[in-house]
Image (cartoon, rainbow, N blue to C red; front, side, top):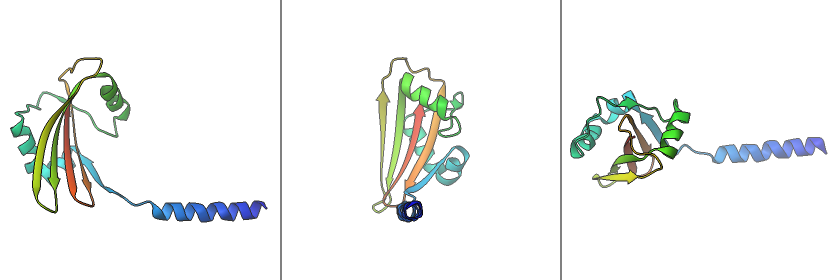
Length: 126
């Protein structure tokens, strides 16, 4: 009975793992500047963002701090979306209000390039 359960578990895990697919590419910081510098500059220019004095926060490498910023502090997101099939670009600014005011001290910028139609660049100022 134990052997049957063990083989069933292996079969189910193999089926499940084979169904998991990568949805797209996530990159930030230097990789973002290398791959999409023109798009990032367009977004910075459109909203007249001055980022040189802001401290950079990494999405995954500083995840605990990233989570704290998102949960406690107000922030402004600047979003650049490229629809790859049509070439259409949209940019928008979204403000998220939290318990604490926006310190204007930190910046996070990253890109998610999905494998279907969209490339989304996010710049968040905390």
